[in-house]
Length: 75
Image 1 (cartoon, rainbow, N blue to C red):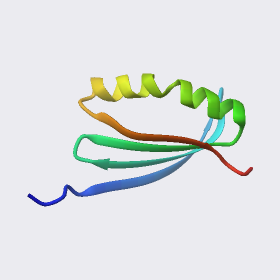
Image 2: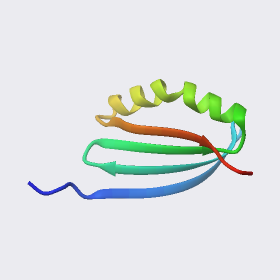
Image 3: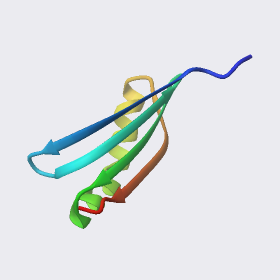
């Protein structure tokens, strides 16, 4: 069998409680890889803490969280 097609997208979000972040999603089949880049250290920590919540939400939708990376941007 061949490789599954991969869908990629990037979003810039400004959230009321978290501030700014960049989100990069890559989806192949039912696996979602997520890379988040936070604008500040406190937001980076909160995003890391939320990883299990994201994984559970994806699982309820029939998807699985593959790789999740959280970094802090240079802003």
